[in-house]
Amino acid sequence: MSLTRMFENIIQYFSGAIARIFGPSDDEYPLTGVQPFTGESFKEHPGEDW
Image (cartoon, rainbow, N blue to C red; front, side, top):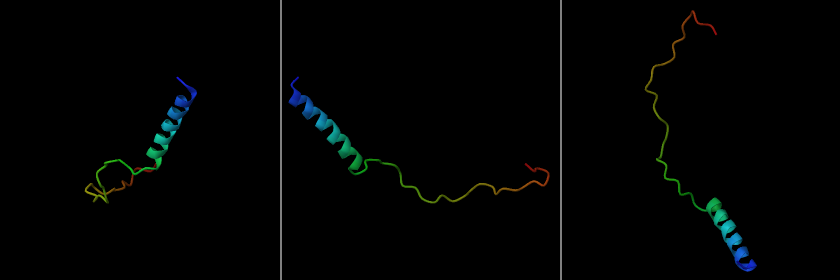
């Protein structure tokens, strides 16, 4: 493998990484927002003092 071809591969490798870092996000997570609380509220017991 010639030196110029190896140099081109290195440049291509790093430019692909830079494009992935600074490119648009490809995450497809579902949109979430504030979730309503549907559990029971905390009730403090008088005998438990930690």
